[in-house]
Image (cartoon, rainbow, N blue to C red; front, side, top):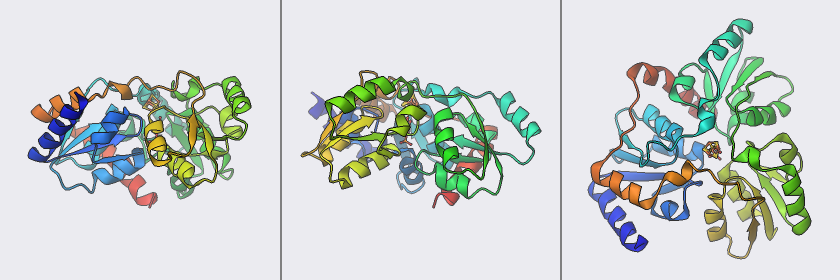
Length: 303
Ligand code: 13P
Ligand code: SF4
C-alpha cells in the first residue's frame, strides 16, 4: 500500500514541479519520499536554493512560514495546516515591546520556532545549530532570547560577556524527558553516550556527552567510535540514525519523545496536497516584509 502511494507521490511531484522538504521529526516513510531531509537551519537554507516553483514542506507551520518568507514568489504547500509547534506562540508581542523600552540597546533574538508575527518584531533569528555563532556576532550586550527558555540558557552559559533576558517558552516534547529517567537509562546502558537537543532542560544538558541540533546529533553519532547512544530528542531522528549506522544501537529515554504535530504529516496527506497543490502557506504582506529581515540576517551571520 505505502509502496504504491510512494510511486504516486514521485510521479506527482515531478509532474507538478514540486520539491519535498522534510524535517527529521516526521515519520520515516515521509522522510523516505522527501527530496531533502534536515534540521531547521539546513531546510531554511535549502529553501532559498531549490529551483522548483513549488515547495511542499513536511514539518510544522513555522517551517513552512520560513520557506515562504525566504521565497515569497514560490508556492509553499503544507500537507496539514494544523501541524503547529506550541512553542512558536509562547511570547507576547507586548512583552517584546516592554523589554525594548527597558533595555534600549537590546537585540531581540528569535528562535525560528516562532510565528511570523513574532519574527516581525525581532532583530535576528537563530536555529539550534547556529544560535551560538549568530549571537556571538551581535554587537549588543543585552540579548532578549525568545521564545525558548532552555536554548536561551544554553547559549547564555557560553557567552558570559552578554547579559541575557529570558522568556518562559518551552518545548513540551523535550521538557518531558526527565533527568531521573535519563539516569535510569544510563544505568541500563553504561557504555552509551548521551546526545541531547538544547531544548532539553538544563539538568539533562549537564549530564550529556554531546549537545546539538537534530543534524548535529546525527553527525556526531555517525562520526563517533561509540556503539551505543541514548538520544534525548524527538523519536523521528531514529530513522536516519539507524539507516546510517546499522552496527550501532540507539535508545530513547521514555515514551514521550514524540511530537504529535510533526506526526500529523502522513503519506496520504502528502499525496493529496500534491494533487491539489494546497493547502498553501499564505502570509499578509505587511508581516512578510518585516519577518523576512531577521531570517535573512540569520542566514548572513550563520555562514
Ligand atoms: P532543529 O533545529 O534540530 O531542527 O530542531 C527543531 C525543533 O523543532 C526542535 O524541537
Ligand atoms: Fe515544537 Fe517541540 Fe515539536 Fe519541535 S519537537 S516542533 S519544538 S513541539
